[in-house]
Length: 392
Image (cartoon, rainbow, N blue to C red):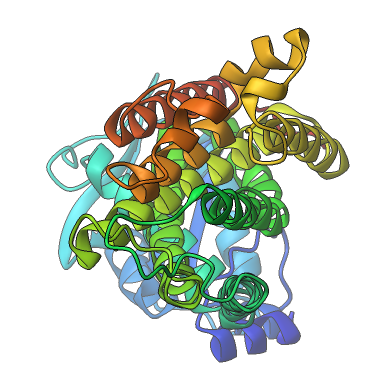
């Protein structure tokens, strides 16, 4: 217990201990106390307020440390058999009636003090906790993920150094455009495969979710909204870092539009793609019973999606079966969105037709479909969260 107290103070975290008969040494470690009797709260507050509790309700002084825990247990036992007793305690500086025992239990005069927190406040609490535990206090993990994005983007830039550069104001020729397809395929690999690093985080959250749903503390949708928003922020940061490295190194800018517009169009696709990849992993973690199964199913779906994306084999060269399955691949729409942004209006625009990369034909339509896929995975995740049960 001393170790738990030391860790709580050192790490600035709260620890809740359920204990029935603490000895004096253990009781002295507590900062706050909740004393229950027959399912009702006799006392809740800082241990230093116990003296006021005794004086107000029993007209006696606080016992010495050696017997205070035993005395509280004895009073709770007596309270169970009392026919009529009203207790008062301090709550936020107010002396309030906290319990009245008669033929039935009833809590009186505290509706104005103990009003339940709003859904917005609960959402904020979950968001703050997830942000603190997974990112602020886990800087090493966040740093490793960002470094991975940066190093992989630099590797892609080194392999495909300046392949998008051309002396023509009309853009790339056909062979150069084929190389750009390969570059974008590698970038999509980063967006859809690196989110697998979050599987342990999501599985850990699932355990917290199951425990807190069991006691009705928070609604499942609050966990989903909080985690998706945090991942959106991280994916935006990581995608911006990766795009800032890979795009200049590869020379991937459409010469027929302003450089900033070409960069932002590619970046927006990378952000949405990363968010879809993260939501896919979150969905697998919440739907499947184990971490290993979540990794197996998630990696299978991602691998098949990459194979059907058109980046390795143009759609026009695919057999009938894989060609008919391309529409379920989110990577297809990510790849097409960036390709259209890079080649539309240039002399290599015909590559979009020859390879079948123009269905849908605009960046907005492809990103819109990615948004629909994100919503689908979010709904699946929400349903799975609502069905999560604690396993003991």
